[in-house]
Image (tube, rainbow, N blue to C red; front, side):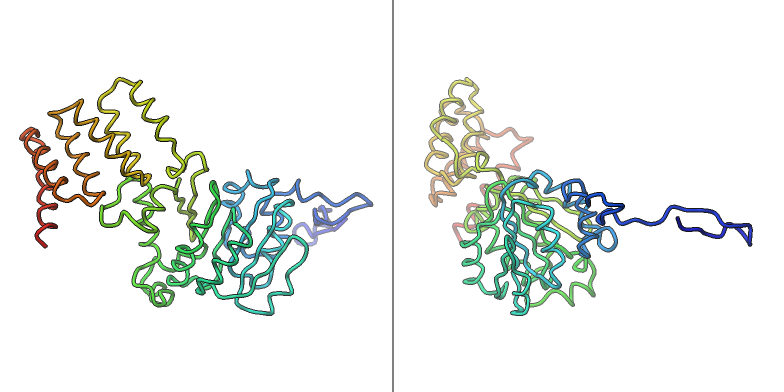
Length: 348
């Protein structure tokens, strides 16, 4: 028992002694890691991700709890003093933990399920090799926090993330003010918050301009499930395999669309297939929509968009003209603007 003074010499009042829940008391066994919260473990491991410092773990606990007992692979870029590697090792008892760092001295943290790979996060060959060796379910970027490094790593590692996985970037808050952005921009031409905001708009709107329907943005548009913004952090979730547009069964969807008996459903299907990169099937669905809705400006506009995506600019213009011709005066501007953009692109 520990005694504390109560008032000015008013006597000694007993107060409970502090006890560490991780330490055996009076011969009892220490608490299992599985009975502790992720923040408890974080405090015990000395990581600055805990509520004592950055309070990231309240979000990690919510986002990653479903992975806790799974044999996942978690990759963290940036090892520092090894505290977070200890955290992940204890919180995920069946996981392989991969730490990536440029400092050779960090190799000392490798043990058992904890692997350490030494190399630079701005070396594309190194990143591809590491992700091929350890296909990741969770990636955490806690390295330099420079915009150029963050974007470079994301664009090379996100495609390697397994379906249903999560890509997390820490310490992005500094990029929200001019001084921090200048200090952390590196060679990047864009602010890192603007970069992820564009991806967030892509998730929300499901729209990608035709000139960007290729490469990483196209891949992101069909694989991203959601983006979460938290204080100083951003998390990008990949769709589970069953939800990836790249894995769709077009025959099945066409049969179900036909069963619906709804003519507009062929436009929906066309848009879905186009976003999945199945342009031939998307074109077929758009043509079916026009066949069923010959006077619908929306059907012709959908056909125009697919024609443009396939590179048939003349057919895209003709379909856009048909959309303008069938549009009501009140909605004419929307279709006319699209036609004008196609004509301007043709003449440029």
